[in-house]
Image (cartoon, rainbow, N blue to C red):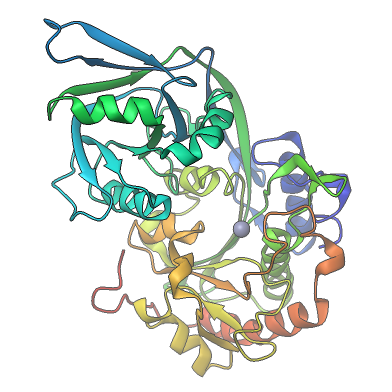
Length: 433
Ligand SMILES: [Zn+2]
């Protein structure tokens, strides 16, 4: 925990050499604990090739002005519009205009201009349109926000990293969110419905890598060894970033050196006793923070066939106690979705339902990538919404080791039971994402 969260690892930035050092260290620990390698070419590391697209110039938004005999208008990012979030370098869709407090239209395939003065409402509307299959939303900026708009518009928009050869990443959104200046919004509002809007920009792509550290303990029972328990966490964090109070290393001690440490401790305990009857896979993923590329690649190249993975427990942010639950207690995301949590709690785990359902944590970590494939996959955590989240101050000095020790200790017995049992958790009705 001290090494992973130390300044020496410079925040284990996703897809950086620092992430590789973290993965290499984790691999050495797995070897010391008697866990066999499950990565590439007989080693512990699994490397995924990523592509990082970047704009080389400002993107444009093109459409046909009405009453001009088909004359095209091209707006430039940074002038008439700005980017809030972008999933693609190129998209196109039919214009649809609504008010933020109007009911959702049939948004599939559309680029929706959202009018209104309440920005929170406009953003909420945008995200619900994204869920309904809209290609993009454009928030009309109010005159009062014009200065902030111009500030944001100065920088070229960033693009999400992708696994090479893939269009979408596991946790990332495929939705695009733009913001139009007050004047541009007025023009868009005046365009006929179904005008085609096309967003495009000059871009280049840079190749990079991310690393998972994978270990396996083959089950001792000839039948049960065909089913696997996957214990996972993510070893990457945000790396070096914007300084806060003179500190630019985002150590990610709680997020997620603590979860990585929990998986290593379970590896140590399970590797030292009699062999579990079931197969156990220990997976420490890279590039969770940039959208789950490590876990997505793992799913495409699993060390055992995916259908043999009976359950996944992901460990996220166990380094501090959550005041919303009893002391030494940890919680499970998506508690009501399956019979996994109650079963482990009945075996002595100090495990309760996630007390922050509004945060939608179930869908915010690597477990979700697996859950979408049907595996009962849930995350154990005690994150109490502390203010050091994703800050340089999420460092080892802020870790509550007494809590962390008690929390992991309470899970050890139930996990030991799980890896020796034939219990395969099931989704409850409506629980499968
Ligand atoms: Zn995390």
